[in-house]
Length: 103
View (cartoon, rainbow, N blue to C red):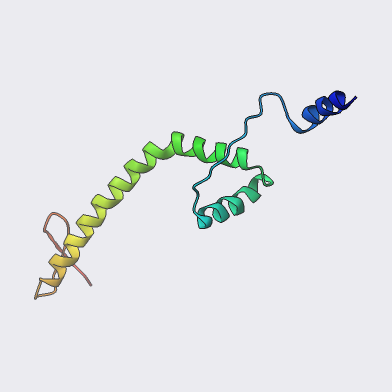
């Protein structure tokens, strides 16, 4: 009789193919952030993790390229600001060095 109860409990609390995951070294802030994020998945940590992995694997490389382009533009803009500060006449110039007319 007790064996039947155990089988019933296993059927109720264990879905076929379900895998448990235990992460032991997780910073408290990261844990809290993930738990908060998982609320968007009705607290289903597995689906939240799957979504994050899918997003990272599918869009990660493209986002890396976007970050690289933004970094390159930031360098160009930084150079323009340096050039603007070193310009005593206050002339505005484009990237090709041609004067920009204002007013």
